[in-house]
Length: 451
Image (cartoon, rainbow, N blue to C red; front, side, top):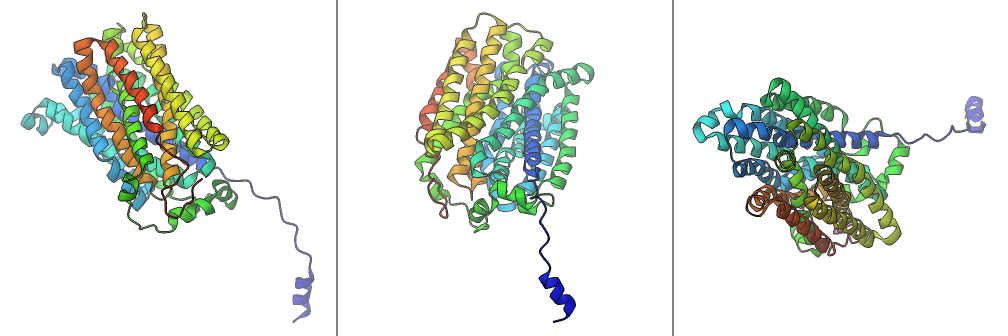
């Protein structure tokens, strides 16, 4: 060995610098999740706002508009499971890029529906229903794909907080949609509102594909410190052990916890879809607001969602650490849905429009306070197949949502809007009963142990 080599060996080690701070890529990913979810609500609630003009111009009845609203929900519900499975199989980055492009194109085509060949061949109503059905088909992949990203990017102690970012997108998208769509409609007509929102989606799809990665270790800007914060080694072992393993549907469907989750989310979806479909028309026709007032007041339920969803995530994660996953998750759902049912009942009986919208807004926020826990429980029950279970759960939720505008219209026309909202409150209470069967502390993954 040379003298130079000996000197190098004997030299004291250099003093290491301060440990690197964790990068914050996971939070930027979650902000994009928020925007993606907000975009879906921009592209679905726009029909609720434009529906008043479409109904008048096309001479559609209230029941006909209910069927058009529900066409979206049917496509959305039926494609939840394929969308979630695709996120597990091909990764959330590619799946959601394709999905955003798909639903954005059909959103733009909604404005073209009355003049399309479909309208001449099959009639106006069928043309609208088919276009909205395919918007729903595209948007179906968004929620389960987002939940797959939360499972990949957030540690086990922050799952509900992670899912709350997606639900905040619901609130912000819903809050911005009424004034934005009303403003566009007043200047350029209802058709332009669909063209513009479609173009926004196409631009966002390009950025999503450029920045997002399926796993933290794949992202060039994530450092080792952030990987440790995410608990990537522990979570990644379960997710990546058998990446091509087919979804164990038999195992999932034999679980009492899974059925409690599915039926509970069915009951959660029914009342919340009142806000996505009938709220604007309810405020204008029943509460006597102008179109402009309805657009402004109609933002309050969504602002309530954006405000209360993060608190729901924080409460759910805290309760899970304090009382264990099973009791903690149940307490979060029970609190949110019980309060939501109470405010729905009060809102249906409020004498004035101001008090009614305040009660109904509190009901929507409380519903989504609980919804964060439903999504977090999908990850608790199966980290490996989160996308598939999330898609299955959201299919049930949106089957409830598909029935909501139809049943609401019939009950409102026959018995009045007060009874329609009372029914929504009863279904909300049923969600609490169903979630009592969910044991979020017992994972269904073969490689996992009970927590």
